[in-house]
Length: 403
Ligand code: ADP
Image (tube, rainbow, N blue to C red; front, side, top):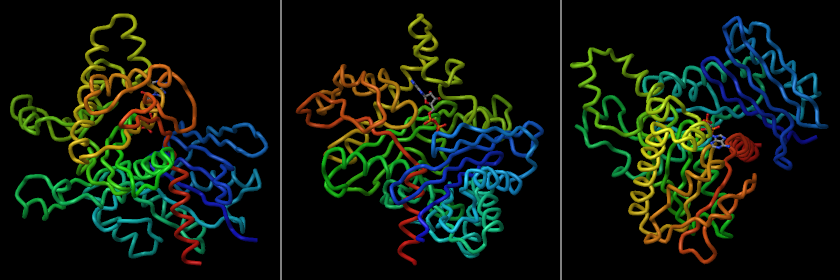
């Protein structure tokens, strides 16, 4: 029997998200989430996706990642999909920061683990959790190939002119300060799927990808290669997000320290967790913001306008970076669902060949689709992202090559 299943693990500091896929047909066999690991109120929600099985929940305390993964393994085993199955080919791990070292999916060994560890200073929140997930999974199945798929990898093709900040080069290099970009798995998947939607090879098209979730980022993709992206050293840079400020004058930070008396940690929390849409109007869910706007709420309207203004600036900037744009693709929670955001983001850009057809924009659905008017110079598309499928596909492709 050929092993064709891939388990995708996305390990956060107190959570583990997982999906089990069968790469024969890219179907999903099970998915789930363990939340609040290490707390009394831990929860595991497991959903078998074969034979229409119902979701199951566990609410007992789950002490650590090892206990979490063991509980996940038990749930999978109950559906006949256990981690000891000979059909399991590999585990694919989402790893947030691969720095400049990792430009592609990588088979994990002790040297790879050491390098991911060396990158902790540039990803202090994410890489330790990712490492814990990998170590735990390796302990459970030491014989199984495990692959790291990096959020930063797709952006490693950015030229130095886009990747470097204009600060003293020695200082930047000493601290590995540069623009790395994130959401790379999504930008890779969506730019490729957009080319497919246009019936073209990715090498033939230039695409601006707008990944608008709670975190949000834009990328300029030229012939399948990323040439610029809006997130930087950390995911804080760029677009207005659910709770992050995105771009601002860095001197705001000195001002908050000197005049506002705030500590580094307080400012970190302010800019990452209490800014963006939630800082501007108290809500970070675009559905709630639209509802408030419909009721005439001025603060919600201002938050929306600031969000759109920044988004439009990035569309214009990446248009200039690419020179020729074949498509603008909207993806992730807001991009896939919020028609008013898509409409407002390209409003007034007819001169650039960009427009949205009202009827097409109002259609909902799970499939990639065009929302620009027939014959438009630039295609505007909604292309649902699928980071788990992309991680599974990259993982499987790598181990097939090595078999
Ligand atoms: P992340 O993966 O970054 O947590 P998602 O890509 O799942 O985020 O996007 C979550 C966001 O998508 C929500 O905060 C909400 O603003 C937005 N969203 C989800 N569904 C809708 C909808 N039907 N209409 C408008 N916005 C939506």
